[in-house]
Each structure stands twice: as C-alpha cells, then as structure tokens.
Length: 261
Image (cartoon, rainbow, N blue to C red; front, side):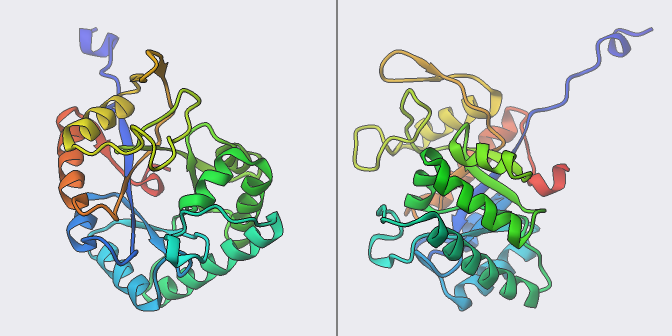
C-alpha cells in the first residue's frame, strides 16, 4: 500500500463567494464574473424590474447562481435603518419580494437558488428569533428548496434549520466583528475594513477556518459556508478580484452552494 493510499489527501476547502448586487450603485458587470453566487435586490431597498432582469442576465452569462435579497422598503436609507415591524409584516415583505424576482427570473429561464435578507432586516433577524422565524417561514412557503443565507451562528440560521431549510452560515470579507460574532454597527470604529489587504487577510482566515483576532485580544471562530462582499463599495470590483485570487492561491475552491449538493 502506498503512502498516498494510506493517507489520502484531504479535500480542498470550499466556499461560496457572493455579493449583493442589482442595487444601482456598483460595477455589477465587473464583479459578477468573479463570483459564484449573487444576491439581487428585488424592489425593496433598491432595484426595479429592469435592474433585476439585467443582473439576472449577467449572472446567467457567467454561470453565477442567483438569489433574492429582500429588504425594507426604505430607499432613502438604503434599507439600513431598523424599522418597527411585526413578524407578520416581515413575512409579507419577504414573500412579495421573493415572488417579484422569481417572476422575472422565470421569464429569463432561471431559478432562484437562495434567499438572503438585506441590511437592517438581516441584522434584526440575526438577533431576534421572531423576525428570523418570519423570514424562514416566508422562504419555506415560497420554495423550501432555497438555501437561506444568514449571519454565521445567528438566530436566522437557527430558524432556517428549525424550519427544515438548508442554511448557509455567512461571513463578511470587509466588515468588522464584535466578540459576540455580530457585525460591528456601521459608523463605529472598525466596522468596515477599508483596505484590500485587510479584507484579504480576513477572508483567508475565515475560509481556512482560522480564528479572527479581535480588538479586545480575543479570538473569534465562525462557520463559513459563504463569503460576502458588499457590491455598493466604489472599489468592490477590485476587492472582489483580490479576494478571489487570494483564496484560489490558498487552494480554496470557489463554488456555489447549489453546485455542492
């Protein structure tokens, strides 16, 4: 027996690389070829039928899996302001936006692969089980085959698992974390990693399963099924290319979750 047979080579680490797109504020055409999945704004915080259709077509041309990115209907604040909503209102909001994007996708001969709430709705669902349950229920009722993306180790991933959905624990390349695993609030120190080098170092550590060094001296370990880059950054295309090249140089396979079933 050869040494290779006795000690088989472990499989290469694999991660989905996703970006929030169709928001009318980024270079989607330059970003999409570098991704494995895209979360498309579906008329809430951003987007309309034309932007959804254009983004879907770009994803189809480059073999990128597509999902819905529902958010609060609050364009003035880009869906990043927390609003007082009931779980029932959240279900209606998410359901309507899922249906809207799916209708356009169907017209393009495409199917949605996942759902991921946006902005304030995402952060509320990460900590509030009632909001998380409402989102998971809306997704199950719409299409139980969709993957639910949520902040790694949060109430949203818990709700998805409890509802029978396949979930993706999401981590972020260029957002700072607190010791509780939650994203630091935008506007606070360290909330956004401004340099490509810092984002690349964080993405590599997350993809390898290494812990993140925190400002308080602690170490944070997170499950990382999918890595997100925000597409509304002015430099998102450059970030996306640097992240992909660094991960591939580390031997990490970039693969959509739908392809890894």
